[in-house]
Structure formats: C-alpha cells, structure tokens
Length: 102
Image 1 (cartoon, rainbow, N blue to C red):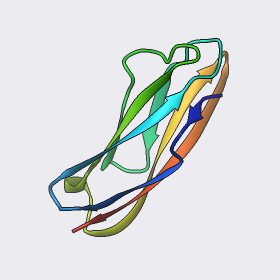
Image 2: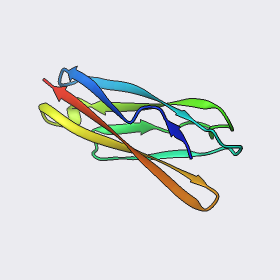
Image 3: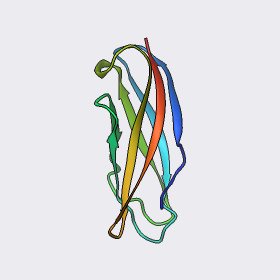
Image 4: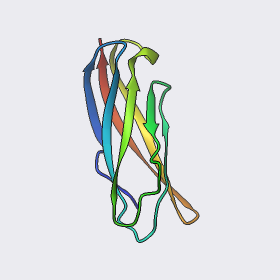
C-alpha cells in the first residue's frame, strides 16, 4: 500500500487563464517497485505521471495541475484518483481539492 501524504488540499484563489500546480508526496513502504497512474474528475485537472516506478522504501513527488481555461468561475471541488498495482491487485486512493477561480 502506498502512503499518499496529502488527502485534501486547497489551490486557493486562481485567476482565470492561469494554471495552478500542487505537489503530492507518495511514499512506497513496500519491498517492491510500484508504478503509479491517475484519473481525474474533469478535463481541467491533470496528474503528471512519474517517469519511473517508485522504488522500495522511497518517496516521489506527483504533480497535479489545474487549468482554469477548462472550467468555469467560482468555488469548485475536484479530485484526482491515484492508482497502482501490487501483483495482480489494483489499489486506488482519491485526493480531493478545492479552488476558487476568479
């Protein structure tokens, strides 16, 4: 099981036209390398794939971007689901965030 250090966060207020970025630390406490993937709740959010598997007992940084040009104005709640496999078993954890676009 991965240790995702951030379960919720707030981008704060972002001006329309800007891209917000947030870094999430992911720790691999297992003796095996783990490949991480992600899905998002909308087209305005992207998770940047890690280039390599997370090595055993190491921590990597996963970047989440929020593109205000692909959403409306106002306060919003979104999410990104981080997925990984251990053997044939698939795991996932959803990280929620809020943002106010002005």
